[in-house]
Image 1 (cartoon, each protein chain N blue to C red):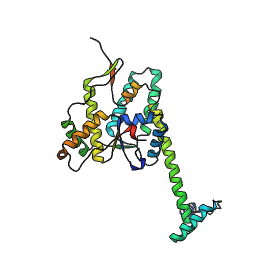
Image 2: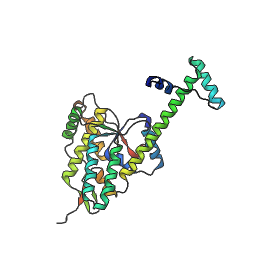
Image 3: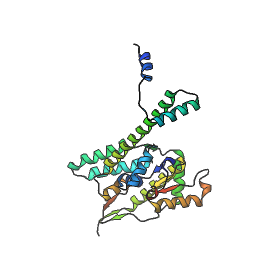
Image 4: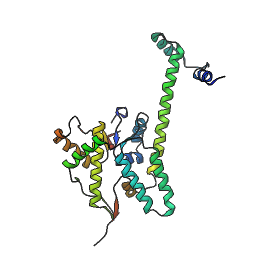
Length: 179
Length: 92
C-alpha cells in the first residue's frame, strides 16, 4: 500500500490508462485519495504517445465512430494534470539512459493478428527512457505497469551512478501495489 | 455602496448556527488555548472542510474525465493509446 499523501508521483503512460480503467474499488479509492491531494503528473512524452494514439485511432475509424474518439481525446486533454517538459536536464539524463541501454529488454508486443514493428518498439523504448529521466530529474517516484522495461532502467542507473551525479535512485512503484 | 465597501461586506457575515455541543465545546477550548475568538476557530475549520470538499469534487471530475477518455476502446486500441502501435501482421 502506497500512501496517496506521499505523492506527487509521475504516472507512466500505460499506468495512467490502467488506473483510469480499473474496476477494483480499492484502486479507485486510492486514485480518489491521490487526486484530492495532487494532480496526476505526467511527462510530455506521455502526452505525445497518447495524442498520437488518439489521432491514429481517429484516422483508422469509420466516420460514425470519429466523434466518440474525438470526445475521448478532449476528455483526456481536459484532465492533463501537471505535464513535465522534456527540458535540457531531462534530455541529458535520457541520453545517458539510451546510451546505457540502446536496445529494449523485451520483444515487440503481439496481440492476435496484430504486432508491433521493431522500429516502433525501439521508439517506445526510447520514450520509456525519457519518462524515467523525467522522474529522476523531477525527483518523484514513477508509477508504472511495465516492470521489465523500467526495472532494466533502474538497474542500469544503479550500476553507473557516476553518470547520474546527484540523481537517483529511480524510485519505481508498480500499479498493482498501490492499494 | 462602492465596490471596496461591498467587498468588505462580502468577507464577513453574521449568522446563527446550530452546532453539536461537543464540537462547540472543543472549538471554545481551542479558541481559549490560542487566545482567539470562537468565530476564528469555526471559520478556519469551515474553510478546511470546504477545501477538502472542493478537492474531493476535483478528484471525481478527473476520474469522470478519465472514464470518458478510456472507455469504448478495445484492449488493442488502449494499447495504441498507450503508445504501443499495433499493425496487422503481414504473411509472406
